[in-house]
Amino acid sequence: MGDSEKIVEKYYIETPGSFKKRFLLGIIGGLGWGLGITLGTTLVIVILAFFVPKIDFVPILGQFLADVIKASQPNLFK
Image 1 (cartoon, one colour):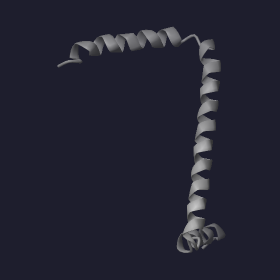
Image 2 (image 1 turned 120 degrees about the vertical axis):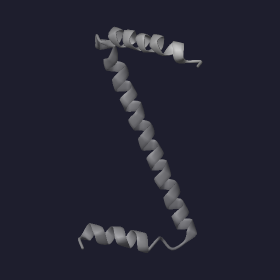
Image 3 (image 1 turned 135 degrees about the vertical axis):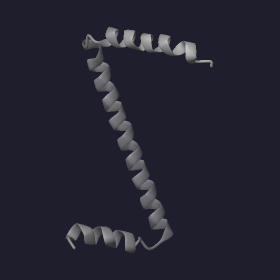
């Protein structure tokens, strides 16, 4: 068994002692995860907002979506 496997096994077998410590670790982990997701999503949206206007396929995409909506509308209320 490698070192990383021992660490993972130890983590799952020997949970932190007190409820307070586990609770705080969970809160800190959740805040870190939420902050990472928020910053990552913001970065992706900013990059897309910067590059999408420079791409010329947007009218083609708009026409494609209009065709899809037009084709699906007769079947919408059946």
